[in-house]
Length: 449
Image (cartoon, rainbow, N blue to C red; front, side, top):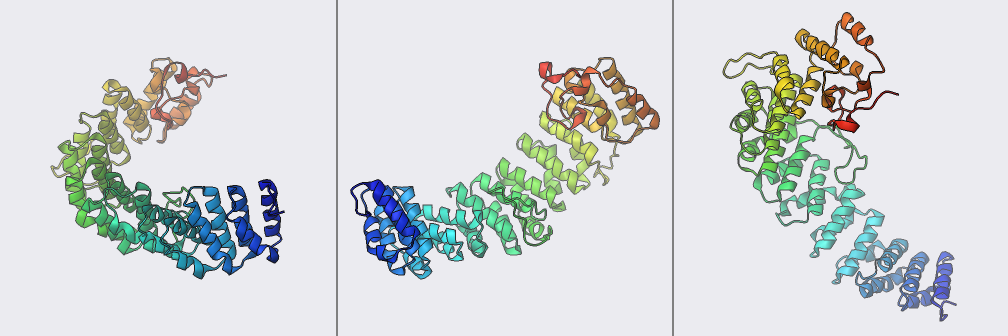
């Protein structure tokens, strides 16, 4: 029946013979791998692999060569056959085959077997195979080939495939040695790669010690194998930090500022402060700079914070206001200025700032533990009760709006507020509720019940 004129019968016969691993069917199955019907050829090829005869490897290689990557289902059948036959020496020999379609099939078979020898294809002349090998090594992962993938960082350029470049960067971060930290820092500073990839390298250095668990490419849960500290990335990045913050494109400068704050590179503070005070770059850069200074806590922070609160960009002013509460200046400023209670500034913003600034200020006010801040909260809660607070600034739930401790009298006063008040179910921003921006109107207020 394997020679029947009906292709459905031929494929069914090939499947049965393969499942039974019937040795006498070898020659007929080899013949059917060249069948004019692609489905019959695919089933026969898979069946041939189930016989597990090494002499059938040339027939499978011929299938890959004749297919020339036109039919992915037929290629998959050949890959399955190679895996089933299990002749790895023949696979390695075919890895140097002149036909790229054959090499691709061998690569995919090695991926299924999770063989570290797949790293051979990272130096292939066909960019498709290099990318496919990188995907296999990073995404499975194949740990034995991870160092080979990481070493490709020296070959990346502005025209490198982004999918390949991101996996090379990720391999350096996951391998986690002093050498790979230095490679990431050098790559980001030299400017050989595209801006998003250079920023990605800096992001990897920023999170080096955090072990967030999830792979940055696949999103799968893959914690690093050993604990890390920030010493290696900090030492690797220090020599390049001034150059990155001063001359790189804005996205790279922003990533460098984030890294400086995350790794607490105090030597970067003067350049970060000048970015904020001189309003260099775009708003995201200045936001990243003031956030980094907040974490570094040097003498430049207070004056930079004051400059940021007067910035022309709303995003910068909001970030500065938030940092003034969450990261109050600890070190004395270079000019000897004293640290003022941020409550005054918050009240001023609530009175005259933009809507987004007001919402941010209300959120920050609820986090302060000073008596003036608590008094302001009580006053605004009373205004809320009598309907004097605009919709966009109303909290979702007044009783959950305050993270700072309040007096017993204030607690009793809040407990007395009516639970059925229409603002209790209001959807707001950060207002004081840790939610996203309130859109007001019909979606801003939901009546209780």
